[in-house]
Length: 318
Image (cartoon, rainbow, N blue to C red; front, side):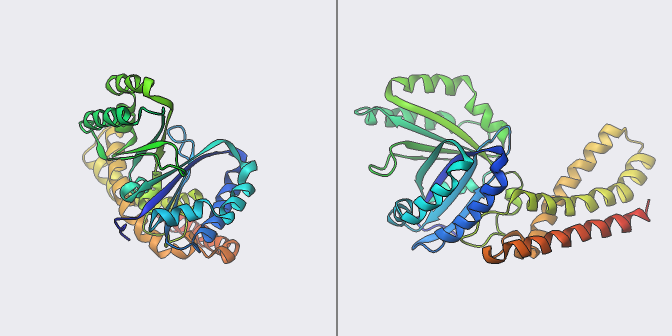
């Protein structure tokens, strides 16, 4: 579903206590059912942590307009939900409102969300500095997009910049570059507070079209189970039909080279099979919250049975 020109995204980043990760995922699934009832709501995406590069949970909620997003942010329903999650969280939450393309953070392989509190009276100077940074980072390898959002009085006191890169390596190369560090040092007299957090989608890029509007992205353990379901037969059949008879016996390639070639093809084939499989298991990946426990059990049992069947079938081929 494409965004309308006036749509906005609420980007929330929060750190969850490690022992509360499963409880927070369940809490967020319940929250998605609540926010889906609000006027103008379009979709929600949940990005779990991927340590060490991303330690935060990132929630993206998209609305048709700024007024509709503000209605959710100030609602008693949201305050009640946040109160119920307080014991699971560590430190402060970052909540930002960004317009239109900012929702692309949910699909880019690697992003950085940078928030800055500008000193009073320094807004014009800071915008000039921001234009200078935008020009410099436009030359950074792997940059897929950049968006800057000024502060929204009464709603969001920070300026927000979202950088989208084609991978974590290029993102961190720019974030840690001497050029960027020098530019950040230039802005020190203009800012009262500055911090950046990275976001990685991990396997989520293979599941982006599965969750219906209003639902969270699939939880990490379900995505992992589907990846295993497709990766295991891919690796086995590659080794049985190509790796051993051709790369090893016929071409007599050294093991490190043969393994590398096998990994390249396995990742490519898995990237094709996972979305196909995920669509057919969408009923399990994004179940109705009222039936979640039963559906989770049914789907998990189905995948375990599929694992066992694959092992038995392949056992006789060894």
